[in-house]
Image (cartoon, rainbow, N blue to C red; front, side):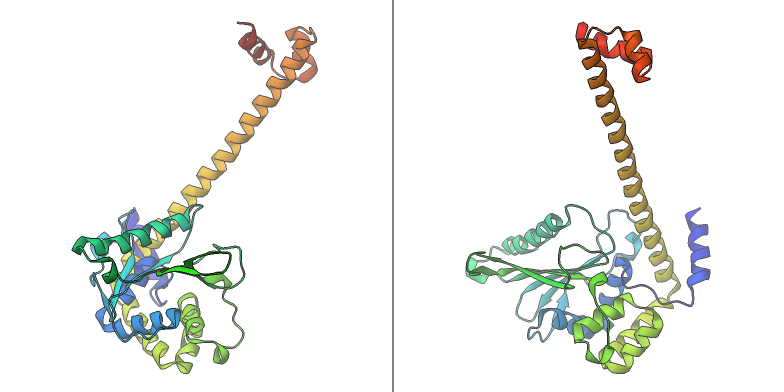
Length: 296
């Protein structure tokens, strides 16, 4: 059944560019060694630092496992200074997303201990996540977090750095006036026409457009990207259904507690079960059951 659906989706979208907000497409795009310079330019646009080169610690994308429901399509990068950067695209979030980011950062930083480095040899670790939803209670699209004293902003250590880029909060007025990061983020979330307009203004994004066009023409990559998109949408629907069931169950529990309180109050006034049922329209059997629960 899935093969049939994916086949139909491919026919419909064959002429469209793959969506970089799809985490599989995001990793397939930036993990390609031909796009190493694009990855470098993207990271420089985020961090505003002098990074001269980047190397993926795992340059292969797990194409065979793109349909694995537990797959994490992140990019782990080492810079020319030995600093670690983890980059990922997330289409949907959840209540504990910030804690998830901290856990990923912790694993990345502690992985340096595997080679028994001295403390002075430890390098900075940066977690970057691009999200297709609103995560933080602020209007700006780019947030950066460090360990610091809230009283006077003294930084405890520069080794912890987390960046959150919220695509829905990117405000577009004029492409010409946008900075490099804003252009990159717009490129990721926009249609082909906007991508082409960005390519006119930026040689880097002109190359990015060429590479996403090339990637989009690969039938196997397209099939797996669509399969991944279906999985993400199905996952979101399951979460919404579970939340809806929880609300309904909550309403039922609330109604039962309300009925119990009413029945017990009226029973305390020496009203018989039959009268309580008649006055409240609560089924007689339910009224008797509530009364028996305290009489026994």
